[in-house]
Every structure is written in C-alpha cells, then in structure tokens.
Image (cartoon, rainbow, N blue to C red; front, side):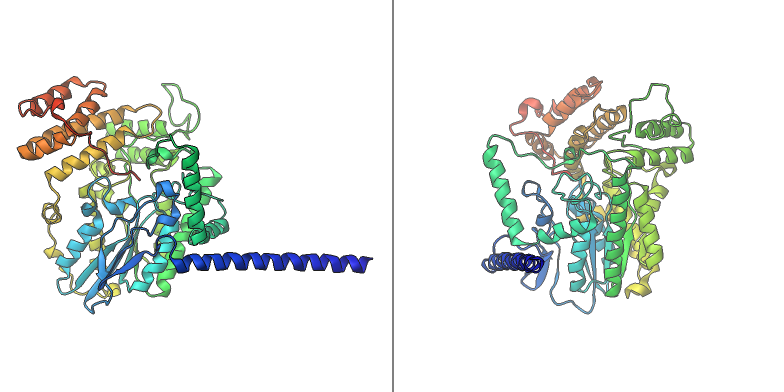
Length: 527
C-alpha cells in the first residue's frame, strides 16, 4: 500500500507539473500573440524617427496606474548614426530635469547644452534629457539599461527625491505589491508584459463603470499620505533600495566603460515648513531637546538661530527638520551620503550640487532664492547646476575625451536666458503655477512662513506685470491671471495692501476681475 500511495503521490505531482507547464505555455502563447498584433504602446525609452531617435512619450507608462500615467515630455533628438565629432550626454532623473514649475526649456540640461556648445565649438553636442515626472531610481535603472545601447559619452544622474513616493516606494500612491526587493523586480518584469497592460486597462474601465460619477483625481503631492519617519524600518529599507539601484547603475555603465556623473541633491531648507511632525503637538514653550523627533520644532529653532546670525546652528536645525519630515517630498541626508560614498568607491564623477548651492546661498542656508518650493530649483538654480557640471567636466576632460574646453567662452545667466527664450512674461506665467502649488500643499494648517511666501510671490507678480506690454497684460488677465491673484490675495491674513496694489495696476487698464472671460490659470501637473 505504501508503494502504491507513493506512486499515486508522484503521479499527482507530475500531473500538477504538466498542468502548470501547459498553463504557462498558454500564457506565453497568449503574450506572444498580443505582441504580434501590436497590443498596447511601445514602452522603449527611444523610438526611431527618420534619421534620428527621440524620447518615446510612453516610455514610463508601465510604471504607473492608468489614471496617473506620466508621459515622457522630452522632445530631444539625437542622430541614429553617431558623428565622430559628437559628444553625447544622457541626463536621467525626474521633474527637476523638466524645469518644473518653470518652463521645461529652463532646466539644467538645456543650460548644459548651450554651455557645452560654447566651450567645445569643434564638437557636435547632444544633451538628451530623459527626465520623467515622479520616477525614482528603480525606473532610472531600467532606463540606463537602454541608454547604454546608444553610444553615450556621459550619463548624468540626478535622482533621489522620489524614492519614497515614486513607483515601488514605501509611500507611493501607485501600485505596490511588496516591499521585498525580489517581488519588486517581479512586478517590474510583469509590467513589461502585454497581459499586464490589458489587465490594467480592464481594471481601470471596470472601476470607471462602477463609479461613473466619480471625478478623475488629479495627479499631485496630495496623493502622498503615508507618514514614514527617520527611524522607521520602511525608511531604512528605502535607503537600502536606493543604494542598490544606484550601485547597479554605476556598475552597468562601468562594465560598458561609459563615464557616469552622480549629482548630489538639493532642497529648500529655510523656506519650506515640514509637512508632518512625529508625535503629539508640543506646548508653546517646548524646545527640540524635549521633543527630538519633532520636525517643526527643529525648523522653528532653525529660524531662531538664523535670526540670531548663528548660521551653523541654523543649518543643523533646518537639515534635521527636513530629515524628520514624515512626508518625504525632499531627499534626506542619507541619500546624499550614499551618492558621495558610491562616487568615492566606484570612481564615478561627483557633481556636488548641494555644496554649490550652499556656497551661493545666504550664509550657506539654501532657501527660496535657489529653490522654488520644496525641491525644484529656480531658473537661476538650474543655471547654477549646469555651471557646476561644467566646472567638474573641465577638470575631468581626459576621462571624457574632451580637450581644451573654453571656460572663458561661457555666457552669463542673463545671456543664456535670452538664448533659451526665458523672459519676464514666462516668469510671470510660471509664478502663478508656483503660487497655486504652494497654496495647495497638504498642510493640516497653513504655517506662517507659507503665508509670507505667498504674499511675497504675489508682490513679485505685481512688480513684474508692469514690465509687460499692454497686450501681454491683457492676455494674462483674459486667461484668468488677475482673477487668480485676486483670489489668492483674498485668502491671505492681511489682504488689503495687495488688493489695493492689484486694483491700482489693472484698474486703469480696464483689466480688473470683471474683464476676465476665461477660467483662471491652471498649473501644470505637479510631481
């Protein structure tokens, strides 16, 4: 009987294996059929177009649920047949590479393109901006696997702010099956399949049918809800994943003998109040020593040290406040430490953007002068990043195959802005986007520093508008700009001075709120 039972058990096991293999064969055939008939968009990073390649808008589609799909907006092209004189740079990262919330053409890869052309006039410069909003190092690693096939002379990485909130992050609002590294790799593999694409679309349409009256939720920072603190296991795990992704990126490029430059990350220290603090609300007379994990107390201490002229103590307090913020929209200290350590260990080129910003910030405290809101640089900040990259490249010419770069041929900030087409009108339009983004930041209660920032930005709008022509001011008003500013001013604690200033500006032109015929200006999607 025992022998018969063993035979039956073995036969059952064989039957299960055969059934599994048949099922997998059916799935594979179905997947192959979907590929043959061309179901779904191509998700390659680049697509061929005549004699060149260009960024595929659908390249990042698979990493996001259908309702939050982020298109790759880059229009950069590079030759299919690389010229012997070409110096080809691929820049990878998230929304910072897109200039957000300013026009995309003001991002640092565009400044870098102009600077490289000026410094190396005998070379054919190709800076290819591969930035996509909301991606993180998991996605960048996938993109680098493709980039290495297109003869790069340099790969430039600015990534790390979205490690918690981007795809597969611990606080992501997107699909996340597991926090385990290997499950994440399995999920990424499945997302490449056409079957996954069909199921994702099917679930989307089923959900839409079940909730037909539900409005489509916009994509933005309000989607990030989970609080993760510095000592949490999820925080430690996120650091490990980032280190592993970045190390694999560098190793992949090193194996192909492609130079890689790693940029340290910058964020607003003095002008952005922490979104969430750990623990209960402390009493008014509390100090950080009593509540060492409370981000807001450290930020307030930083303001006090800054007012007293103690920049060293202020910097320590502001950095601690950022690192303790429970909503991780800004990369905290462990990520820059990881970048520096990896560059030192691997020989990768280090672009120390953090140090460059500190050098150009008042008393070394990076704030609104260089960062528009929480982490995206101002246009001047983007110029500074490109300038910092150029300084480093001049010092590493031999490793990059560059010779006799002309640092004296570089233009100044105003000159590059003119060449890129960025002026007062573009600054005014982008500033309204910024104001709305800041107004809608997910604070439980608006902090005083945000109130001050909004009032300051409105004041800058009122100072810049008279610099425009009447036709440009009229266009701004008819697009809803004046109505928008009036609404923002009305929501401030002390609106009257700015209300009077706005009326004095647009009233004589007949462009007050009553002249508006179109909806108020709406910002572009936030990261």
